Amino acid sequence: MLGDVSLSAGAWGYRQDMMQSAIASAERPLRVGVVGVGVMGSNHARVFAGLPGTELIGVADPDRKQAEFVARTLGCVAVSDVSELLDRDVDAITIAAPTHLHRDIALSCIARGVHVLVEKPIASSVEEGREIIGAARRAGVTLMVGHVERFNPAVEAIKDAIHGEDILSIAITRVGPFPPRMSNVGVVIDLAVHDIDLIRWFTDSDIIEVQPQLSSAVAEREDIALLQFRTASGVLAHINTNWLTPFKARNVTVATRGKYVTGDLLTRQVTECFGFQPDGSYSMRHLSVGHAEPLRSEMLAFLRAVRSGVAPAVTGEEAVASLEIATRCLSSRPTAVVPAQRKGPRAVVG
Ligand SMILES: NC(=O)c1ccc[n+]([C@@H]2O[C@H](COP(=O)([O-])OP(=O)(O)OC[C@H]3O[C@@H](n4cnc5c(N)ncnc54)[C@H](O)[C@@H]3O)[C@@H](O)[C@H]2O)c1
Image (cartoon, rainbow, N blue to C red; front, side, top):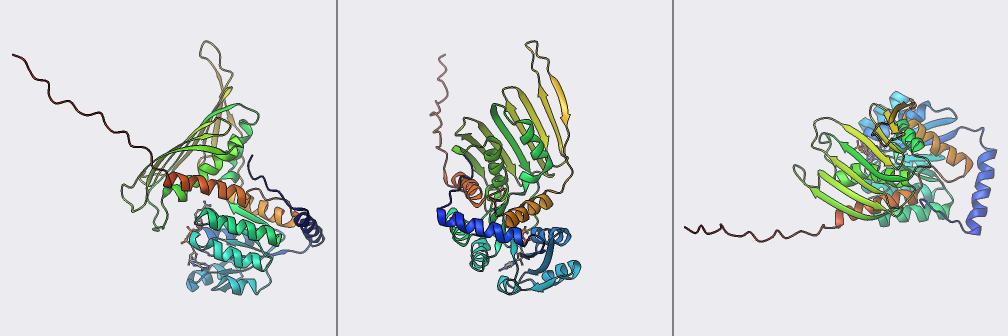
């Protein structure tokens, strides 16, 4: 099972107290901030600024120009460091600084009793991710991780379509051009971690076998990955991801015993084939898909968890489990098959 979080009696009592105080203060706007306002964080700040019941207090980024630009646009303060934001008495913070900083920034927020939404991947390593989980649990604060693809309406439609079905296989393609900003991670940690999370979420099962094939065609780190998995529930899954495709594509296909569901996560078209007949005929229909902005839905889910004290939609445990699989893909070296020894040219007998 995914995200199986057990709470001790003490922690449960604390959680209940927290729920009571959260309910009591439900009328008060939540004071929120964003740490790291580059590409992703500036979107977090934009969404926060437009949410009801939320007051965007400030954004923190050592890049003063960028922080001030975002703050000026959205009408909040710009500071250069998370500690300055914490001094402004915020209730919740989203962390969209570079991944290698997630652990330290999250721990400093949690130490001040502030709820955190950490961008994916949760941290640079499984150990660091577990440190964040442990600290959040001890402090009794909400920790959610930004696996935003779960809130894509096309993904939600696929999840609904396969509900109660016997899933057989999943294939996901997530390809595109090389990112304009050089990152210190390859495609597996940057992109495939989204789809590892989706495979675990669609199947409600853990991945127990990984068979990765990686290559670095242009970048220093892997920029092509073909990853195969088997889940504990017996589903076979495949991820095809790279930074070498001139256009972006994000497609999901799920085969179940009774259905074949395909979804385009960019155009948000989801189609299912069903009613297979012995003569090869079948029925097909386009499913209705919502229009909500995934990031807005994710942040609303985070705020609901903060206000209610219930487990968030994407827990730290789930995020660490996905990061662990991504890390295994990088560390497991597929066994090389030694090519059969070539026979020399056959002697021609005259
Ligand atoms: N969920 C998604 O689909 C998605 C998409 C893109 C990025 N991300 C994640 O978001 C995070 C940021 O990625 P990005 O693409 O926005 O990067 P980015 O480089 O555009 O932005 C990072 C920002 O953090 C700032 N920063 C650096 N050190 C800081 C510090 N000590 N305190 C506060 N801010 C600091 C930088 O100045 C920069 O403005 C990464 O963890 C990445 O994996 C998630």
